[in-house]
Image (cartoon, rainbow, N blue to C red; front, side):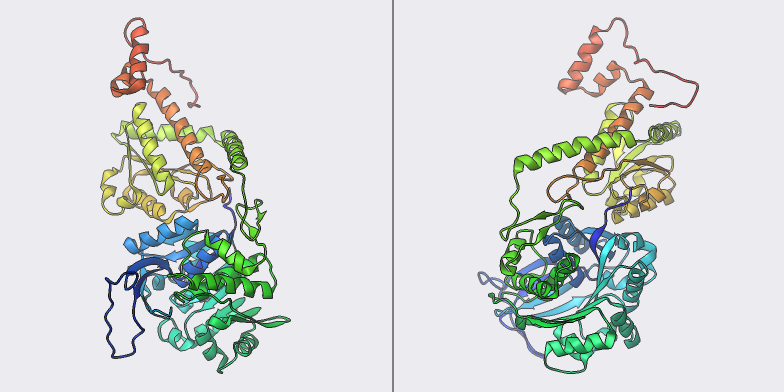
Length: 565
């Protein structure tokens, strides 16, 4: 089953921002003391950040389905960033084979002005050849593609824009740093010019726009000059407290900013772009897009940090914007909201979820290929003959499913162990023998951490069974056997948290355990011996005592043809 389309897929900077309060922003050759003990100030905090990850976060809280692809380090900063993505439901298709994950040090003064020192890290290591080869399938799911001139090599940005153009996907490029700074680090001027001409929409910051337009002064005149030079569908310049300027076909306008108390200007342009992406996706007019972007920017500067803290900020944006916006969940579940946000009936949502769960599991029952279950049993039995074992692994919610499945298999006579996916790459691969079978669980089949583990398992020589809702995924291509467990919708208001897909994984693995139990011929005596305590063990002993004679094995039906459960 093909995975659902995403409104936006971004590629670019993912950064841990380390914030410090400072009395003022110092100049060259100056020194200043940060008072970390003064109440309410001078503190340090870590926050999710990065030009692309920030604007995807703001697009997400406005209701878009978003994802990010690229390269990240397998380190504590990378784990921190992925946790932040998961909290907002930002899909990620990441490779963890880079150096250290990106971070920046941000100094913020009492007026909200800031100075940022950025370390590009693993983001800068994404090569142009990796765009199509490693991330192409994920990018093709997008209705819009966003990227930046900030951390990615310009050659990589060109490859991304060309890939999107070949697949008729509009692109948005955030020109976050002036061209002179970009070309000193990211690539040549010719490469920068190619990026600017390939972009469907350009959003340069004011400093970058000055260099691109070759003139000082009015933001609208600069936007018009840049659009005339590069032929973009639109050029939008964010202009701080003055709002924004937009030059597009048949449109040339300024949109004033909202007046708010400024706490931290970090990420205001990113919040604007997130709202701009939402406006483009909803096909709003340019005056509405500019106003919505300014509202998001105003909400951003009224708090510390560039990445949105949660979905509650949407109501603040809507209040400033002053008009209704669509609330988007899964495709086909769009709803209308008042300025105060949607009001939902918990009882109705509960009934909807229960009905959807029964419907999805009923469909899964019809779609399960019993031959795959039979083949999985044969693989496990063959491994046992060769002194091999069974391991079960997963990342995120499937990790909990894997722990349950390993325990269930053990309780019905098939010894199995839980295999921690990320720890496998740090030495736990020694837990797996070449004669073993590993069951890997992933609904999307494209979870980067699990793919790295699956690849290591295969290179080690063990056999791999994939339990996934996506038979066309990368995990499915790696595995020796795929048990397809497709679920169309996970249920819930947002439709993001793994609920019904987890039920589907448990459903399939429980079915596999039944066939393993039948094939073993498990006796009540064996079951009660393994369950020394609890109601189940007591029930097994009672049933065994009531049987006449010695414990006997459950009857197993043998057939001349291959076993079918």
